[in-house]
Structures are given as C-alpha cells and as structure tokens.
Image 1 (cartoon, helix red, strand yellow):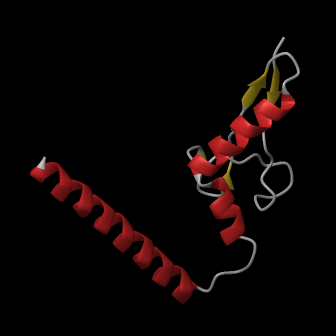
Image 2 (cartoon, one colour; image 1 turned 135 degrees about the horizontal axis):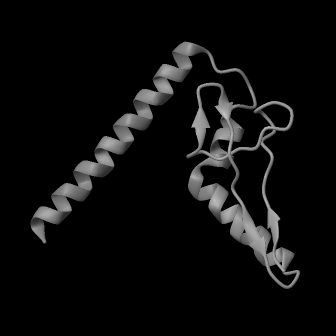
Image 3 (tube, one colour; image 1 turned 90 degrees about the horizontal axis):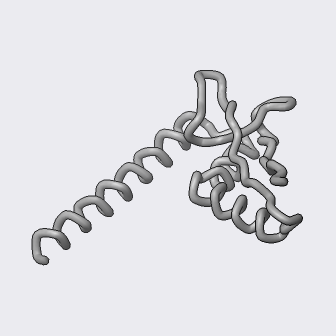
Length: 98
C-alpha cells in the first residue's frame, strides 16, 4: 500500500498546494507527490526534496518570503535571462567543436 506525500506552499495562501509546472494566473495549484512504499519515509522525503529542488520550488519560496520591488524584480529577471543566454551559447559553441 502506497501513501502519497506532498508539500503545501507557505506563500500561496491557505490550503493551496504548490507545483511549479502546474500554475494558473493567481499562483500555485497542483501537487508534487511521492509515493511511500513499506513506510520508507526517509527515502520518500529525500526524493520529494530532490523533486522540489529540481522544480525550483525552494528557490521560489525563498524569493517570495519578502516583497520584491518591481525595479529589483526586473533587474533579477534580466540577470537570469543573461545567465540562460550565456549558458545556451556556451552549449552551442561546445557542440560545434565536437
């Protein structure tokens, strides 16, 4: 018998469950879940933490703890976009030489 294990988002409002890839206009709805077999809670927690880290959930929770001014938000988004572009160009140049 498997039990389901999820995480409730602390910034999404009362009772909302968070999953990055399942969003609507108002914020967070959806569920990141891990099935627990044979009462292996430690293993399930490890898997859940890895899923949430890959989704960017922890980063988003940390970012949303405090209000972010619009100017700071724009600056952060520009920096993230530049980082993504640099990473993509680095990958493409590496592929052309191989």
